[in-house]
Length: 124
Image (cartoon, rainbow, N blue to C red; front, side, top):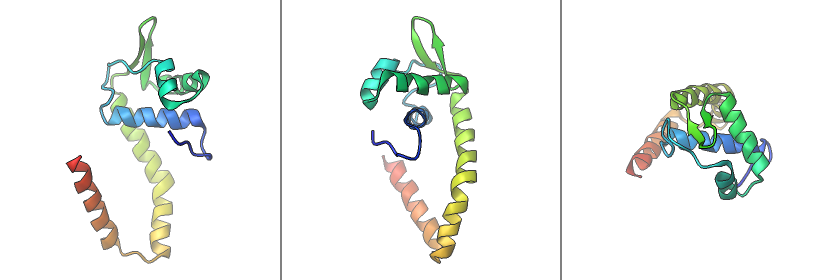
């Protein structure tokens, strides 16, 4: 995984795991990879991965069954969806609107590209 310099690695990993939960790679109440397995996959230190898991556990996205492993919490998908939707609206849309305003990009062009993107996603 290529990490961005402007955000802590453990948060980027937590975000990736959250996206995988949203995409049903890890359904609710199902086991996720162990800390060591996921650390190896991400090519990061086990301590960094543990921080990601702790972060997600504190937000009730995952939970630990002692001796068995980590699992996706019931309702995790909805929590992730709502949290990320609010964050996107608060953090990114204002900048997005500012850029299309400055660059005088017609909203019709944005809508057309979005529709094409959705069409491509639905093919996959």
